[in-house]
Length: 531
Image (tube, rainbow, N blue to C red; front, side, top):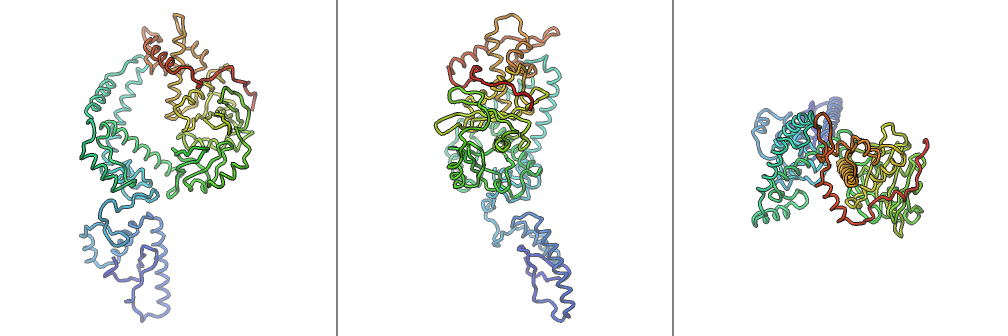
């Protein structure tokens, strides 16, 4: 880039490595004082240029473009015009133009790219999950998809506002919902039966060429509708990650904890957790499964396990049946343990905000015992004095125990405590996505069991609430989702849908007598008095 450009002492340039340019064609007949003044001006310009360069992107291509612009400022008019007409691709640091898109480095999540990300809104993206090239898309395609998503969101919100006005009166699906369902069914029917031989070869060639630096080709693997849903979820995840970075929870150049070694399991994390920076930047954390202390290496963990005397959570064991136990841990008495538990939970929860102020809470930790100790299954926290009668503030089932019935056991145990306290309970809002699914499933099961055992003629939501300890608002919302609540002649009527009850009973019979239920007779607990 420097060919034909002459050094100007009044506008010193800056090279890509931050050093000043030198030019042997300068005037050697100047006095020493003018040399010193020129050098001083050069150093001043150099410092400013280096500062501007350090504030720009750290990518080497961006530095070269910046250096090229500086040279154009100092170049004669004919050189500027020639550069403006030059439409050749940008050079790499080695001086060669990239031969293909695969030569562009997208494997580093810390490198910022000056083009629209997967979200389609920002001019730059800072993570590999937001890179269009990684997802085999162009920046223009991402912008078009972002506009389409915004239009769909506006239409959906308008439709929901219309439907919510008469939500309690019209429980049957609306015409708009019916049309949308039919449209989805038709789109899924149009899906091809499978991949052709040419498509399989194309996919294999793409995988061999790019490896893990690109996302696999996803077209024709599923229906266009499901693929579009997946693309929307990817864009939303990239947008959430960008929001965390802008809020300062994830800094540019920092690494989230990718995996943790927890007991005999190696777990992939889902979200960012505010562990100390010296641990968070490691990418892999080693955690004692009994005392929950976090360490930097396998060696430190091995030495710690040889000395750690903990084999179960601190606090009082308030429930035991078989291998399942629940310990009540006071956040005021066992502050460090509860803080470490919250930091661990944040790796798998999106909406959790409590990390260090644990003193006003009680933590109920569920464990599964074997000959090596009591292993953490999950937990829920609860305010000692909740004015809104929340019986759960935060709830988590560890990933290795998910989809095995432990989540419902934790929820059932929280309502069992509410029954002993003679209160009606409800979880604190907002619920996470997985939490909402678990609670909806639990409320549905409780209501259908109550309907199955109910022998009277008239049913009351208040009576259901008193017997099950479930908040009436949660009961009503569940009945609405099951289409068991109707508005007729100025009254709300609860319908006993025998088809849903028979379906639930069949599942209960098929499930048999498993141990994933809470036995009230095994609870040894009295409500705490005061704090």
